[in-house]
Image (cartoon, rainbow, N blue to C red; front, top):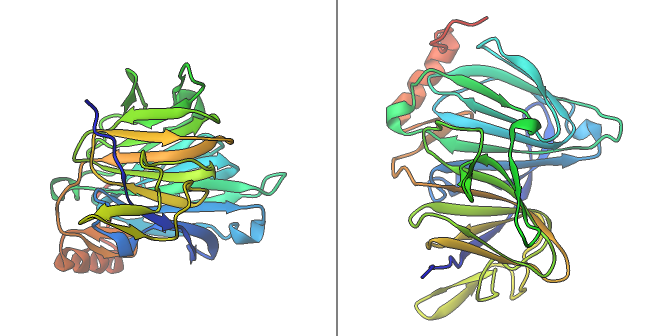
Length: 304
């Protein structure tokens, strides 16, 4: 018998500015580490105003993590110290394993309608792989499988396996699940998620009930209810649902569809030392990383 996950917490994304002045919404980040282990950060960049994003993210370093950029609309130019360059277009994913260190830039382009919309997810690396060789994966929309269930639910599989179909991002150290899911109105959607794994859902559009008790804004503890924002039954856009433990996620829609991202992964259970774009296990490792960056010895690979 399945143990359906209830909701432990609901977080609202918060406006922030990153890079050279990019306006975005942060679903979670530094303040939640390591509670959402192995995930570190999720940013939602969504604007029709080019001035909000055109300054982009000029050259900057990463070490100790993986950054996953997923674009729904618009285009982003990418370049890195491995010699990779190209365009992340609508439906594409850039999966970058920083490992021992990489320097890259992400510069959005202005499109005809002005809309840029996408997400960047950071996944931590275990201590055993913090200094692994960096690697870059350009996954185009054509290579991301989409399955359509009998009830009309559509699932794009970026990483992980659903109904026997595997996503193209394979051999990932933390073996996460990353899905783009659309559920039509008046539908109950269920998906197995391994017990003990962190599971998160970020609502992109629409609304749904993400809790079988129809109480997505609270959780039970010692027989009492604790609420974040009230007793509404449905969770809407720019909400992050943090599920409690169990082996299945259940989502119910009513009069409108819902579009959400689902992320799941086994916690690393390791200490987190985090400063800007670098995430290690100790403060000393951070000191070494920034000292190497200043000295010009940060990169452990041969650039282009």
